[in-house]
Image (cartoon, rainbow, N blue to C red; front, side, top):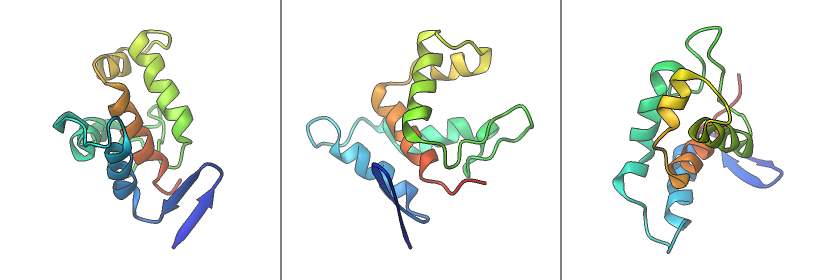
Length: 113
């Protein structure tokens, strides 16, 4: 099943493929360094936000289905220090733009709950 949303095309259950496509099309058309591998990136987020994008606690936001632009903006804000949160600032401090885009694409492609 394919769902069309303004500015993006999502296939149900195909968020991983969307991330791979985003990585493959970035830069010079070559895949990024292994650090941008979606499974490794998502694994670092999963202890709190889960692989399915659902927060593990009432104070941890759900990421599933959020807009990719919103997610990437927030991660960049944590990385730069514009947005303050001790855990998220630590996690985002060394993320590259490609990694942020990959995470935003992955979580925005999941069905919201």
